Structure formats: C-alpha cells, structure tokens
Amino acid sequence: MSSTTAFIAELIRAANGIEKLTHYEVSRLLDRSIDTIRDMRSHTGVAGIHSARDVLIDLRLSSERARDLLPEQARDILIEAADILRSLKIELDRTE
Image 1 (tube, rainbow, N blue to C red):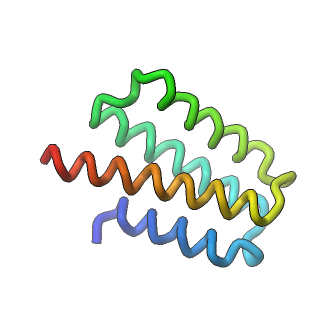
Image 2 (image 1 turned 180 degrees about the vertical axis):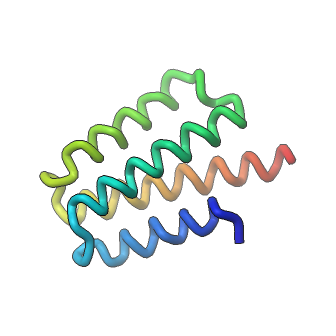
C-alpha cells in the first residue's frame, strides 16, 4: 500500500470516528492533506489552476477553524480531502 493510499484510508477512518478526534487532530489531518494535495498537484500540473487553489483555501480555513466545526462538518471536510487525494492518485498512476 502506498503512503498516499494509507493516508486516504487514515482520513476515511478519522471521518468515520470523528467523535473520537480532538479539534487539534482534525486540524493536523487537514494540514497534512493540504501539503499532500499541493505536492501531488505539482506533479500533475494542476497546481496553477485557479479552482484548484480554491479547494486548498477551503481546507486551510477549515483547519484554522477546526475548533468551531460541528462533527458533521469535520467529517465532510475530511472525506472531501480524501476524495481529492484519491482523484489525484488516480491521475498520477495513469501518467506513470
């Protein structure tokens, strides 16, 4: 299992057990997601697209306000991050 696949699984597990996570843990997962997405996008050439940056802004804002997120909102944003990573992994695997 690749590190990206393992991280996607970690995000899904965290989303499914959101009530067990602290706000800090949610924020750290989102920060890791941002870094990973940014890195993967640079490899796919998606990094310069304006709408691609908007998703990173949304994730950053959610990370910064993790304390104020309802559990459902935190779960949804973790699933969104996992979905973005999954899509980027598929694209990278296709180009290799």
